[in-house]
Image 1 (cartoon, rainbow, N blue to C red):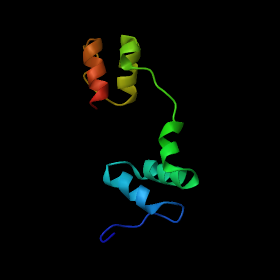
Image 2: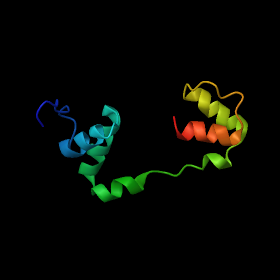
Image 3: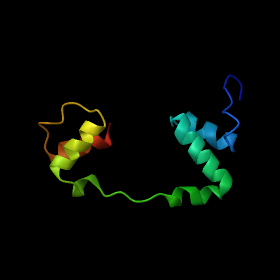
Image 4: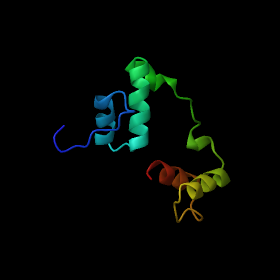
Length: 90
């Protein structure tokens, strides 16, 4: 890893950490996934997470609240499909 700073000693799997960072993941996310994959098989790590409903199932008011939570702007005049697109492509 020339030119790259090694993660701290709390990171259990440096290769996974660096792969996630190279893909644009945050330091926290990379460390969390690297440590989880070191504790169990890497293929089981992706299966662990919960499920989230599709934005199409949300009400417009809820989509606007989510846009506000994410710090997006220009959402107040958008219809449902525009809001969904905005949230997915942020």
